[in-house]
Image 1: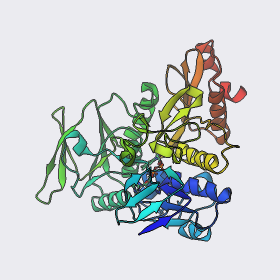
Image 2: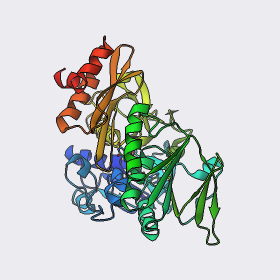
Image 3: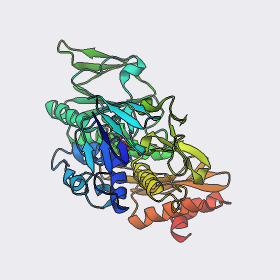
Length: 426
Ligand code: FAD
């Protein structure tokens, strides 16, 4: 059994949705394109799963957050794909890829052939088992990567209203889930090994603002230690979290956000890898000229930093996907992907954005007692990264633009004095 397409997108997440939109914009013909996805639903805006999806009231549900609603463009519902002659092959895992024959083999035994393949397989949540802790099958241990995970999290949250939730991991999944758990009236403790939350991005000063805010909402931080094991009841449910420092935390539920791993296994040995992902050039093209990679799975040259990076953020998934489609459909008119790394988060009433790179020395600015402050990262005499909490659209645009320009910074004290004004007047 087999089907043939000109273009095949493997994976049905954020990048797949934006790629499909770009194909349509550029005039793909009916029947030329298909999306093969393990998920049961058409591509959606994954960040909604840790935000609107977890609200106790008026929670976001599909179809409200199908791609590309996150970019204020049309919403790609299953009807949209049908109208544009795009085949959605859902609930279908691809189990092997033969790049010489240009075919994918699905778990149901179907062969799908392509002329151009866009790999958009994203990443999966790291599991505790990979760190030697059992608990994966417990009914009240949750991860959050896809809709099925989010549904489990909602069910578990509802079943232990007012109880104790332990969040393992202090990254953005942990932070966003902790906020949602509080909003759902659970008592929340966060456990992570670092000295402060969001350690990969936040400075201690920025982190302490968020930690104090969370503490004012009742979140307890347990830092500098890790989970060592769980206690279970006779139903196999976790009842307590044992920490390496000897403490025990009572738990009615556990949420684990300890990082992700790119889904590259289908292509190991067939494509060149880098930074844990599929290495691509500035056109998102891999070491096999018919295969492109986009989103979380792609390691691409970030021109502004002069090096290859793999980013795990929604904006880069959206834009790299669009760029790959442009490069496939109009190769002569499409240059190198020129991307400024950007990521954001929204928790409680707070909202921050970050552009660029967080290397070098940091100059903080603004009112850390209020709700509008930020930081600039200065590396080798140039501003290379900007963070802002509580900005307006214009202010975020200004820090993005400033970071893109990488201005030379001679006087850090002067930059600190000017603060946001520096970006607004540059
Ligand atoms: P994904 O969206 O993960 O899609 C991958 C797809 O490939 C999935 O559909 C998967 O089922 C499918 N797939 C994988 N392997 C196979 C296979 N063998 N066969 C068939 N299908 C397969 N980023 C931000 O910048 N800001 C945020 O606030 C933010 N919030 C987030 C909140 C949550 C809960 C999560 C999980 C992520 C968040 N992110 C955020 C990150 C962002 O969502 C990702 O960067 C983005 O989804 C990456 O898109 P992608 O298409 O590369 O991968």
